[in-house]
Length: 274
Ligand SMILES: Nc1ncnc2c1ncn2[C@@H]1O[C@H](COP(=O)(O)OP(=O)(O)O)[C@@H](O)[C@H]1O
Ligand SMILES: [Mg+2]
Image 1 (tube, helix red, strand yellow):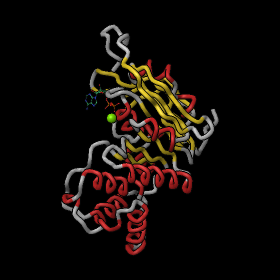
Image 2 (cartoon, protein in one colour; image 1 turned 180 degrees about the horizontal axis):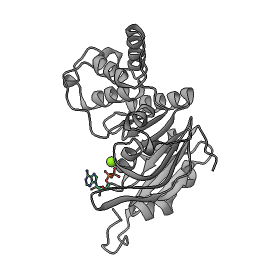
Image 3 (cartoon, protein in one colour; image 1 turned 180 degrees about the vertical axis):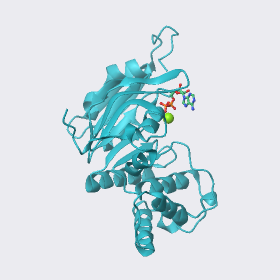
Image 4 (tube, protein in one colour; image 1 turned 90 degrees about the vertical axis):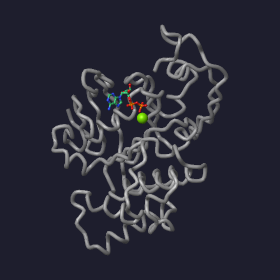
């Protein structure tokens, strides 16, 4: 099979913990360079597990092709050089400043040998683009939750990865910074041809900023496509157990979801599937 060198292909991926399989034989259409995909789905459905497997942080079976290589058969450092993952939980409160933390993320990026001055410029440019350059010399321990989330994002994007995986990057952010973050991520993805997969709970945000939406439920794909195709009332009923109206402009894919009721005819337990 000819493999596209500018896409990430997930084939028959299987990921789990001990004896419990969370993602079972998952095959997805390729993720393309320059595109952002939103990964949405209920709590505990396997979104974080999938992202961690894509990042090489969770053992997985199957194949992850990127540029002709199966990432799962590369050494961990080679995998990590191409894929960065920003975790859902905030980073530990280490006694570094925002500048130092971002610089150390850049330094551990394999192959990132460059003069110190160049690294400093790159760090400051990243902080400026995120609108947190004024926090550069503040310790991480003194930041608010939202500020730490932005500092964590700076550490992920400064490494200029081929694949950028963000796990709920806007969960602690106000409307202003939600917009800034998604706008910046999309600009970087377009400029540098990054492949981005972003877990989001907010469907309006997902449809507004992402090219594609993958809806995951119980470790399997329920819908996958442009926002207006993937996010439908039927999908929301099946996946979240809600009766909802989806309003939107199919032209620009910006969708609004109005939940009208909770369905009590989910699975055998009478609950929406979890
Ligand atoms: N470290 C772990 N050990 C065992 N089970 C886990 C671990 N992390 C997550 N799980 C389980 O895997 C399932 C998927 O979790 P997760 O990927 O975090 O879901 P999501 O990100 O969609 O909320 C859940 O049932 C969760 O309890
Ligand atoms: Mg999660």
